[in-house]
Length: 361
Image (cartoon, rainbow, N blue to C red):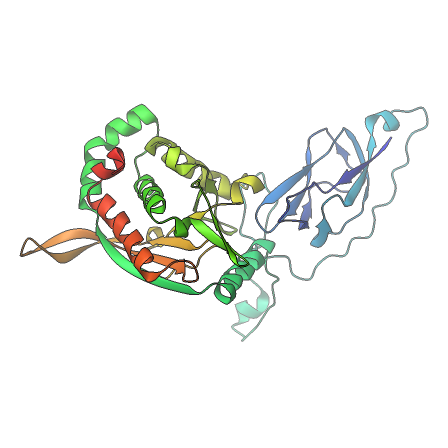
């Protein structure tokens, strides 16, 4: 029996994808649920599986081609047809147009097909000549570019800064990190403190948990915090749903899981969609100060940076403290400067007195 293998239904915001590679070719036998192709969307890479065991009779789509949800990608002759009295004739593979230069995607784990690097080595490079090459953007990189440009063109973006003395949090982590890891099974990091402080600040300043829709402001009465994660394919922002209801351990476990699955291409579209506010930590790469860009249609993003020992005035004396610059980029259309500065000050107050987070003060 001939079975059509179709591109899966994606989501309301994602209707097309790029067929990156065929893992099986026409004429090859496949087993039920075996991965036969990789489909890249602008958020994740999906594995296309065989709906039944049989032989791939025909490939309808060339690698690097754009496909839409529900489009027929291949034809499968099931085992029932193959085992019939009259043996099935394997059709010749459909001609496949090969691209000149494949999309620049970093090497994936062993379970994924090999990807060329963004700047593949070539004999012009080897000879020292002034060579140039064109490499198409991945769909993820295209989407990142589109959304960042959209944010700058649509919103009235402004950034305000503050600095936080991280010594109280570091002392608290130092006292309890071993017991926390032993009992909770995960390390006590910094992100859980910032997520908790962000949720409390958003409750005080709801405009930063809202967005503009035409001539209306849509306020969220829930707190879905996007956490920017760097993967080999680029930046992705999985979402902590109802982050205000999560414990410190649940937040840390979720972030560790996001980071692992971002690189193994296991994040789902649902985990990457939505979000009412975003936190981006450039400090893990050594950034001392930056101006993050909001993730549309959100109205704010909190940028974290490297902790650095610096001299500060404390009780009339100069002391050395572990300090972090923090930045809030916000949509000035609905967030006033007073609200933005106060929001960042609320986070500073909570981190410099972390007992406030536990008591929700």
